[in-house]
Image (cartoon, rainbow, N blue to C red; front, side):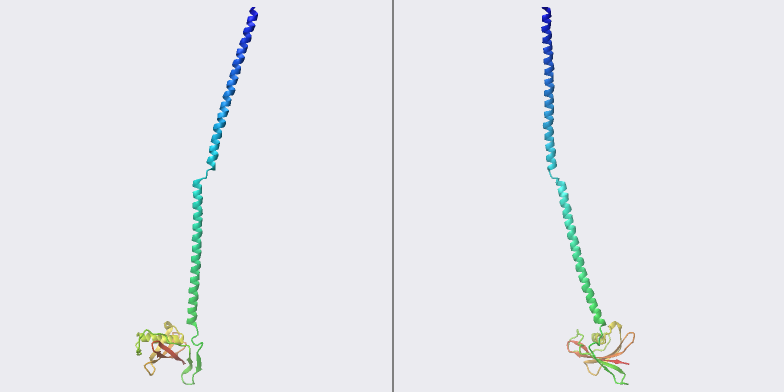
Length: 223
Protein backbone atom coordinates (compact mmCIF):
# COMPACT_ATOMS: atom_id res chain seq x y z
CA UNK A 1 0.00 0.00 0.00
CA UNK A 2 2.86 2.34 0.68
CA UNK A 3 4.16 1.92 -2.88
CA UNK A 4 0.76 2.62 -4.30
CA UNK A 5 0.51 5.91 -2.35
CA UNK A 6 3.97 6.99 -3.45
CA UNK A 7 3.14 6.31 -7.05
CA UNK A 8 0.01 8.44 -6.83
CA UNK A 9 2.00 11.20 -5.17
CA UNK A 10 4.67 11.18 -7.85
CA UNK A 11 2.06 11.36 -10.59
CA UNK A 12 0.39 14.28 -8.88
CA UNK A 13 3.72 16.06 -8.45
CA UNK A 14 4.64 15.52 -12.07
CA UNK A 15 1.25 16.82 -13.13
CA UNK A 16 1.70 19.92 -11.00
CA UNK A 17 5.14 20.58 -12.41
CA UNK A 18 3.84 20.10 -15.91
CA UNK A 19 1.05 22.62 -15.25
CA UNK A 20 3.57 25.13 -13.89
CA UNK A 21 5.74 24.75 -16.98
CA UNK A 22 2.73 25.07 -19.26
CA UNK A 23 1.46 28.10 -17.43
CA UNK A 24 4.91 29.68 -17.58
CA UNK A 25 5.17 29.05 -21.32
CA UNK A 26 1.68 30.42 -21.88
CA UNK A 27 2.61 33.55 -19.93
CA UNK A 28 5.80 34.00 -21.96
CA UNK A 29 3.91 33.58 -25.22
CA UNK A 30 1.25 36.06 -24.11
CA UNK A 31 3.94 38.56 -23.13
CA UNK A 32 5.66 38.18 -26.49
CA UNK A 33 2.34 38.70 -28.27
CA UNK A 34 1.74 41.90 -26.29
CA UNK A 35 5.24 43.22 -26.99
CA UNK A 36 5.12 42.43 -30.70
CA UNK A 37 1.59 43.78 -31.04
CA UNK A 38 2.46 47.06 -29.30
CA UNK A 39 5.52 47.48 -31.53
CA UNK A 40 3.44 46.91 -34.61
CA UNK A 41 0.76 49.36 -33.46
CA UNK A 42 3.09 52.18 -32.29
CA UNK A 43 5.64 51.54 -35.03
CA UNK A 44 2.93 51.77 -37.68
CA UNK A 45 1.65 55.00 -36.17
CA UNK A 46 5.15 56.56 -36.22
CA UNK A 47 5.65 55.41 -39.81
CA UNK A 48 2.35 56.98 -40.81
CA UNK A 49 3.31 60.20 -39.07
CA UNK A 50 6.67 60.19 -40.83
CA UNK A 51 5.02 59.49 -44.18
CA UNK A 52 2.49 62.26 -43.63
CA UNK A 53 5.25 64.65 -42.59
CA UNK A 54 7.25 63.78 -45.66
CA UNK A 55 4.19 64.30 -47.82
CA UNK A 56 3.75 67.85 -46.50
CA UNK A 57 5.22 70.51 -48.84
CA UNK A 58 8.33 72.36 -47.68
CA UNK A 59 6.91 75.87 -47.37
CA UNK A 60 10.30 77.46 -46.93
CA UNK A 61 11.66 75.72 -50.02
CA UNK A 62 8.59 76.73 -52.03
CA UNK A 63 9.02 80.35 -50.95
CA UNK A 64 12.70 80.27 -51.89
CA UNK A 65 11.88 78.83 -55.31
CA UNK A 66 9.21 81.50 -55.85
CA UNK A 67 11.67 84.23 -54.85
CA UNK A 68 14.27 82.81 -57.25
CA UNK A 69 11.74 82.77 -60.08
CA UNK A 70 10.79 86.38 -59.39
CA UNK A 71 14.47 87.38 -59.27
CA UNK A 72 15.07 85.67 -62.63
CA UNK A 73 12.04 87.43 -64.14
CA UNK A 74 13.22 90.79 -62.78
CA UNK A 75 16.71 90.19 -64.20
CA UNK A 76 15.29 89.24 -67.60
CA UNK A 77 13.10 92.35 -67.58
CA UNK A 78 16.12 94.46 -66.60
CA UNK A 79 18.19 92.99 -69.43
CA UNK A 80 15.32 93.57 -71.88
CA UNK A 81 15.02 97.21 -70.81
CA UNK A 82 18.80 97.58 -71.00
CA UNK A 83 18.88 96.10 -74.50
CA UNK A 84 16.00 98.33 -75.53
CA UNK A 85 17.79 101.38 -74.11
CA UNK A 86 20.98 100.37 -75.91
CA UNK A 87 19.06 99.95 -79.16
CA UNK A 88 17.46 103.35 -78.73
CA UNK A 89 20.86 104.82 -77.90
CA UNK A 90 22.35 103.23 -81.02
CA UNK A 91 19.48 104.58 -83.14
CA UNK A 92 19.94 108.06 -81.69
CA UNK A 93 23.70 107.85 -82.20
CA UNK A 94 23.24 106.70 -85.78
CA UNK A 95 20.72 109.47 -86.36
CA UNK A 96 23.11 112.00 -84.88
CA UNK A 97 25.99 110.62 -86.93
CA UNK A 98 23.87 110.79 -90.09
CA UNK A 99 22.93 114.35 -89.23
CA UNK A 100 26.56 115.25 -88.65
CA UNK A 101 27.58 113.57 -91.90
CA UNK A 102 24.87 115.50 -93.69
CA UNK A 103 26.07 118.74 -92.11
CA UNK A 104 29.64 117.96 -93.12
CA UNK A 105 28.47 117.24 -96.65
CA UNK A 106 26.64 120.54 -96.74
CA UNK A 107 29.69 122.40 -95.46
CA UNK A 108 32.11 120.69 -97.85
CA UNK A 109 29.65 120.81 -100.75
CA UNK A 110 30.90 122.73 -103.80
CA UNK A 111 29.18 126.14 -103.53
CA UNK A 112 29.49 126.59 -107.29
CA UNK A 113 27.95 123.21 -108.26
CA UNK A 114 24.77 124.74 -109.73
CA UNK A 115 26.33 128.05 -110.63
CA UNK A 116 26.95 129.56 -114.02
CA UNK A 117 30.67 130.30 -114.44
CA UNK A 118 31.87 132.75 -117.06
CA UNK A 119 35.52 133.39 -117.86
CA UNK A 120 36.65 136.97 -117.32
CA UNK A 121 38.03 139.24 -120.01
CA UNK A 122 41.82 139.19 -120.42
CA UNK A 123 43.48 142.02 -118.57
CA UNK A 124 40.39 142.75 -116.44
CA UNK A 125 41.86 141.16 -113.35
CA UNK A 126 38.80 138.90 -113.16
CA UNK A 127 39.58 135.23 -113.71
CA UNK A 128 35.93 134.15 -113.76
CA UNK A 129 32.46 135.34 -112.79
CA UNK A 130 30.11 133.05 -110.81
CA UNK A 131 26.33 133.45 -110.56
CA UNK A 132 24.07 130.98 -108.80
CA UNK A 133 20.25 131.15 -109.01
CA UNK A 134 20.07 128.94 -105.91
CA UNK A 135 21.42 131.64 -103.60
CA UNK A 136 18.91 133.10 -101.14
CA UNK A 137 18.86 135.65 -98.31
CA UNK A 138 20.75 134.54 -95.19
CA UNK A 139 18.11 135.88 -92.79
CA UNK A 140 18.13 138.84 -90.43
CA UNK A 141 17.19 139.88 -86.91
CA UNK A 142 16.95 143.54 -87.98
CA UNK A 143 13.72 145.44 -88.51
CA UNK A 144 12.74 147.71 -91.39
CA UNK A 145 13.53 150.28 -92.57
CA UNK A 146 17.04 148.90 -92.98
CA UNK A 147 20.14 151.03 -93.26
CA UNK A 148 23.49 149.39 -94.02
CA UNK A 149 26.05 149.64 -91.23
CA UNK A 150 29.64 148.85 -92.24
CA UNK A 151 31.05 149.23 -88.74
CA UNK A 152 32.92 146.08 -87.74
CA UNK A 153 31.17 144.29 -84.86
CA UNK A 154 27.70 145.60 -85.73
CA UNK A 155 24.73 143.32 -86.41
CA UNK A 156 24.72 144.34 -90.06
CA UNK A 157 28.43 143.54 -90.37
CA UNK A 158 27.84 140.07 -88.86
CA UNK A 159 25.00 139.36 -91.30
CA UNK A 160 26.99 140.60 -94.31
CA UNK A 161 29.92 138.39 -93.24
CA UNK A 162 27.52 135.44 -93.10
CA UNK A 163 26.36 136.19 -96.67
CA UNK A 164 29.95 136.36 -97.95
CA UNK A 165 30.80 133.02 -96.30
CA UNK A 166 27.64 131.40 -97.63
CA UNK A 167 28.26 132.50 -101.22
CA UNK A 168 31.92 131.46 -101.39
CA UNK A 169 31.55 128.29 -99.29
CA UNK A 170 34.28 129.39 -96.87
CA UNK A 171 33.57 129.02 -93.11
CA UNK A 172 33.69 132.36 -91.32
CA UNK A 173 36.43 131.08 -89.00
CA UNK A 174 38.56 130.24 -92.05
CA UNK A 175 37.85 133.44 -93.99
CA UNK A 176 39.85 136.65 -94.34
CA UNK A 177 37.89 139.83 -95.13
CA UNK A 178 40.11 142.25 -97.04
CA UNK A 179 37.36 144.77 -97.69
CA UNK A 180 33.63 145.17 -96.99
CA UNK A 181 31.75 148.30 -98.01
CA UNK A 182 29.07 150.04 -100.02
CA UNK A 183 28.58 149.16 -103.69
CA UNK A 184 26.87 152.29 -104.94
CA UNK A 185 23.50 152.14 -103.14
CA UNK A 186 22.22 151.82 -99.54
CA UNK A 187 21.01 148.28 -100.22
CA UNK A 188 24.06 146.95 -102.09
CA UNK A 189 27.44 145.96 -100.71
CA UNK A 190 30.59 144.20 -101.87
CA UNK A 191 33.30 142.33 -99.99
CA UNK A 192 36.73 141.02 -100.93
CA UNK A 193 37.57 137.77 -99.20
CA UNK A 194 39.89 134.76 -99.33
CA UNK A 195 40.50 131.57 -97.35
CA UNK A 196 43.22 131.80 -94.68
CA UNK A 197 45.67 129.94 -96.87
CA UNK A 198 45.17 132.71 -99.50
CA UNK A 199 44.82 130.10 -102.22
CA UNK A 200 42.15 132.21 -103.95
CA UNK A 201 40.58 135.64 -103.76
CA UNK A 202 36.93 136.53 -104.36
CA UNK A 203 34.89 139.68 -104.71
CA UNK A 204 31.39 138.93 -103.50
CA UNK A 205 28.43 141.16 -104.38
CA UNK A 206 25.42 141.15 -102.04
CA UNK A 207 22.08 142.96 -101.93
CA UNK A 208 19.55 143.58 -99.18
CA UNK A 209 16.18 141.79 -99.41
CA UNK A 210 13.50 143.45 -97.28
CA UNK A 211 12.81 141.54 -94.02
CA UNK A 212 14.96 138.61 -95.25
CA UNK A 213 18.52 139.89 -95.06
CA UNK A 214 21.52 139.96 -97.36
CA UNK A 215 21.56 137.83 -100.51
CA UNK A 216 24.60 137.07 -102.72
CA UNK A 217 24.14 138.06 -106.35
CA UNK A 218 27.54 137.50 -107.97
CA UNK A 219 31.09 136.38 -107.25
CA UNK A 220 34.18 137.35 -109.12
CA UNK A 221 37.29 135.25 -108.73
CA UNK A 222 40.12 137.74 -109.08
CA UNK A 223 43.82 137.36 -109.79
